[in-house]
Image (cartoon, rainbow, N blue to C red):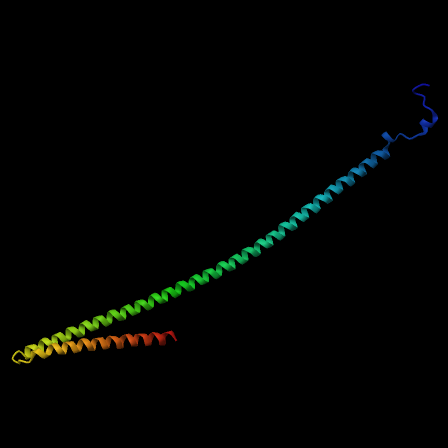
Length: 163
């Protein structure tokens, strides 16, 4: 037999290796494969985007909680500063009162000395100058009583202001 001559059974068999049907089948299979890859890639990207979106929402809520916490700390700090300033002003007022009281006390003492000097000048001829020392002692005791009264008044006024 010749190469060109093929048996009849072989001649009537279709040549699948070179047929157009096989070519179309290959194209359809490749199309499905490409479509499957696109679907898988889309599903993966969708899942990745959804995870990313969830993480962004969580981070936003964490940021919101942190911002709220910072806001509370900031308000507490401002309250603390205002309270400290209020105490400082109160201490300054008390210091001014104390200084004014000391100044008034000195002025009163100076006036008393001036009065004593005038009295001494008038009483130079008088022999009873020994009793003046006792008068000064009484004024010191009176000053202590006045100091106590002033401190008590300050405490009472502070209690009234506190209410």
